[in-house]
Image 1 (cartoon, rainbow, N blue to C red):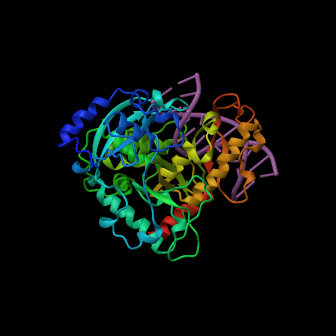
Image 2: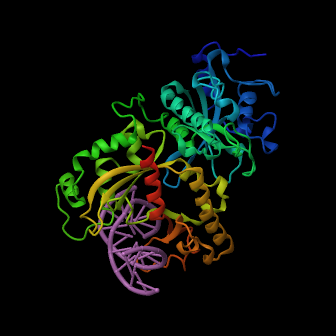
Image 3: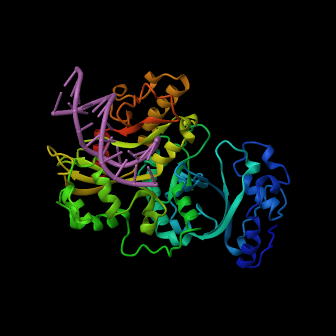
Length: 446
DNA sequence: ACCTGATCATTG
DNA sequence: CAATGATCAGGT
């Protein structure tokens, strides 16, 4: 039986606004939170405790008559105080045998409906669900992003068609990810067109996309990308007038002052901050930045795009490594981030005299992610055993990968003082050769 | 000539 | 005043 409780969208929204401020504890009239392990429990609590649907397996407060699907999603505050979605939103399982015969339009796959009624609650690490509070609700029309969804779907489909289901990764696509499914990472399933068994995967709205939806709660926008289709195009267009110029020349031409003393090590970042925007302001600069996590990096390369330096990431925080790799923030970060590399050519030249060459974009594949997992686990083990010798020092790897490196001020003894403060004086760095290979892969694909 | 640990100017 | 984004520079 379908409960046609709401006859119009307005009626539904007006009623739903009443949920804001409530906590799961007070909504949970059937004590569903006491049982553990049910992933969809929050949705059920809202369906039964707020919309009054009966508690049985068929109970679905999906408002089919209005073509609206209910989703309960969490957000959290990051260390830098920005708000992000807690996790990706998993949709249906990908049936490898079926997908190759499906077209986007008819794929039963994704969303039963194209409008989502999202109820946002705030999640706190290590706290209890009954205390979590609902902060807002929103009707999101996904047809706005249809072009990208369709493209993402076809990327996944084509890969399976080529017998490469085992090579699928979240990095392949923009909004619609193929995320791994199954409690054990060792589960494998059959695929057409190849004898290799692949990890079972599901369609999911990437968490960066969910964050984008969250932002549309408080940033106004019409979702118009204007003349640009991709972030790369947008950035290249901004940098176009400066190709062939040195860092010093670019800086003085945009700031009006020449660099007198020593050249700041982050002169590239100072330039990209001014020209393109600071990383945290990007979302306000252009809608393109809204639903994917972009990170702008500046890097010196030689004439073949071989990096002269490693890529550094933010300082390691001990407490972040309490989480196992599979559920870690670092894994999510590497899965979802798109690095924009602004390349300056400068073999034999010093910082400041390097010449703006080009822009490259890299994302990480499942294979990359698994390698990074090794480094992560080494840090985790070092922390658990309080033994710095377990850290992923560069010399520990035969092949280039993600390694640990000091990052601080004179006198900080990054390794000796590794356990002193939660935020360490060390960071992850990505090896030059590794980056070179990523750049080469992308250039080949183009 | 690299690696890899160390360091620095800028930023929030 | 510590975190960030990156380069510097000493030892091999």
